[in-house]
Image (tube, rainbow, N blue to C red; front, side, top):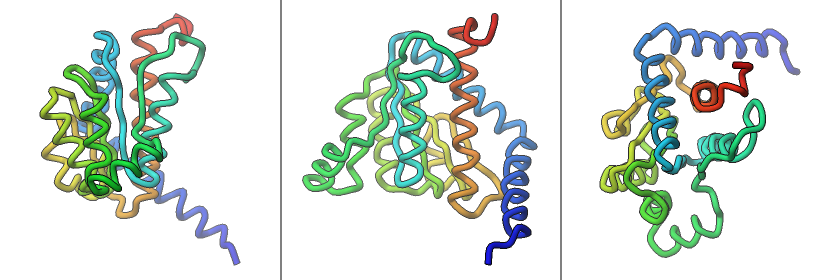
Length: 198
């Protein structure tokens, strides 16, 4: 039987995770730096790229479509892509191994001045780490949306954003999607103030 008390407890846990994130000023600074890096990338004609596994891939795809489509109101389409094409991923996995699926795509599409958003709730996904390493070699700025202390990616990315307190992927991902939306909103407010009544 479904318990309303358990449902309420889950909402409370989610709220406590977000509150813990907001309580650390370094987290707000990191999100601000993420938004600033995304704006600078777009201003110079660069590409926003994103990658992750499972639910994190869904977040990567969500991030990309908000730029190419509509976020709040109509404005110019902006260049963003998630590494999620099944034919590319399975081809690379078949030929080079699953750990290389994102790195090969960074190599194919990324250039100096672009930005990669690397999403991993553990901070230890090997294919995400290899994508970050490829990005570094190509002069691409890296942002890590991470959890569980940040893992090995915390020290590899340029801008680490680590969800505190949460120990499960679902709670971590709930904060990740808020970070993505808020960064997009911040960039849109700066680049297209008319979308916000200015």
